[in-house]
Image (cartoon, rainbow, N blue to C red):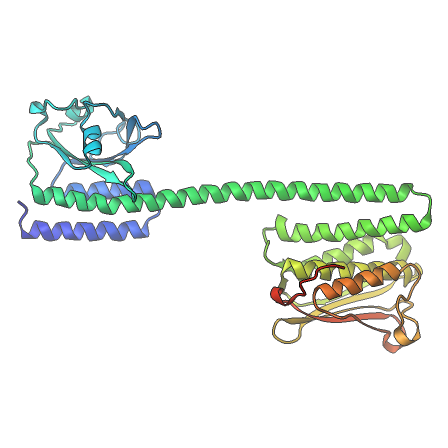
Length: 393
């Protein structure tokens, strides 16, 4: 029977193992440390943890201390009727072999004798819910008859070990599932991106092939709107920001792409951006991007007459989670009294902007500052649950 000092040491071992298991996320390291501590507490020469393999018919020596190379992580033991390990798991209790020279109940593997093992004890490890994980086996190089206090210590030790193993198994499964879902999600988004590009290419090809000018312009406008959607998709998903879109890079890329596309028609355009570093939910950022797409496209097509000009876009936070968008050009501008649509071919675009603004709870305000150019101002709330429930345009 252990004396008082030994009992105190075992309590210390249990506490030390519990603290280590809480800090560590490496199952092999935890099992190895568990073997080291339990061997020291029982004055044993060797210890190991045996894990039931997926086939349910073999045990792998998953971790251990005191063994020569070629044992831990390599030796597999059959779970047969003559094995002490199988018997211990089936009975659900520790099984002691005091001296293997006189053991006639079980067939013991030869590597134990090769390491000088004379006595051993198997203690089954159960996961929460009662599923067997394997065993903690403590091996000694001299005959040993463990008493009730020794057995209760081992049972307490394995009772701690089971939930720790279960936690790490679940954490590993979650990590694998997360990595798999992330990979599948990335593959899906890559395919969506390619499909959007194909659709855009088909629409533009059709626009070049049609005979009527009105149909050609309409198809080109559709292609540009699809491109605006593609940019949102790229910013959100391909860069891993699925919950919020960084406005500055999105708006800058959108406007620059449109200017490059219409360079021959509009002439040289100087761009000015004053955009606050902010992220908006996709349901708000997408309509906002489409509004800018319509405004800039309309300006490039009809405002400059090929002579070039200036387009400025600013976005700033007004109060709380409310933002103000200001887009302006120095082109031909709106007619007197601010009547819209203003320029030839812009009727559909203005109606679309009005509808998109309603989606984010805003009302566009049009003006002609100093009698020239066109200015669009709108204020909106970037909180997702403040958006109108009707998303129709």
